[in-house]
Image (cartoon, rainbow, N blue to C red):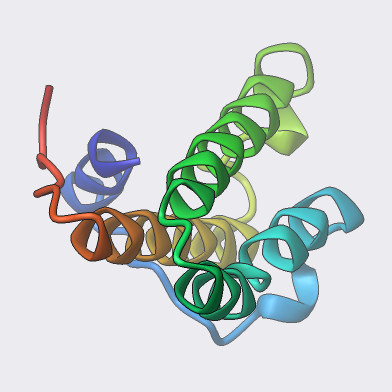
Length: 117
């Protein structure tokens, strides 16, 4: 995610929530999955089962990776769509927010997220 956001920044593209209505059903499925995070954290805390957070983060990363790979076969599903600045900005915003959920979850587990591998 971070490398894509850096690439977009280098090209002068910034993430924006201004055109979120442009997101597709595939995009929104990822949003809906990530939206489960607050309830999951609460349930994990109540049950004293922190592994639920780790499993969720793993699954969220897998969902994001699967979504990312759709762009390999279909250029219109890429995060940076050269001919569509609004959709690109919305998808970059989505990627940034998914990254924030992952950072938050790792922080709860006491793990520092790295910016670059």
